[in-house]
Length: 170
Image 1 (cartoon, helix red, strand yellow):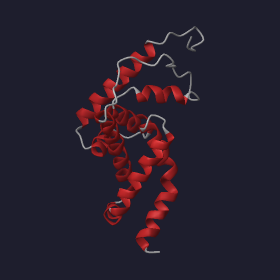
Image 2 (cartoon, one colour; image 1 turned 120 degrees about the horizontal axis):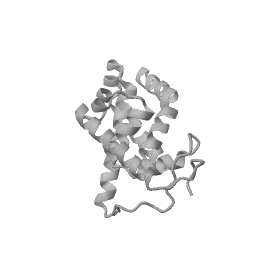
Image 3 (tube, rainbow, N blue to C red; image 1 turned 120 degrees about the vertical axis):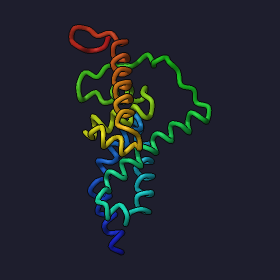
């Protein structure tokens, strides 16, 4: 096996689980779409691996590919005639704690692809606004705007679901 392949395989072995977790959040909890995102990102990264390796930016590069691919997939779905509605599904739950991941995924799914990408990179990957801007290829101001609107929309969605005094949905 060539040195390039060994380095790439080592990277995939070390980081694939973390990349899959991020991809799952970017794809609003759809495991199959997340696996496709990781596969697409790794395919593209392999082609550019010598350049990425020299810059010591492997994970950032792969994460950037994944984020852009997630946004592109959503755009393609919209062009194929899927209609987005303003109405929420009746079964939207508010997360009662970290164990309620499905509710978080439903809230993330309600966001635009860019808002979802910004919030995942900011709060899950713990990247700075500058790092997110670099990953998405936009300005830090755009990152702030997407984060603000995304958080506001999630708050609005949560406010639409009544709570009982114990903090669970009715």
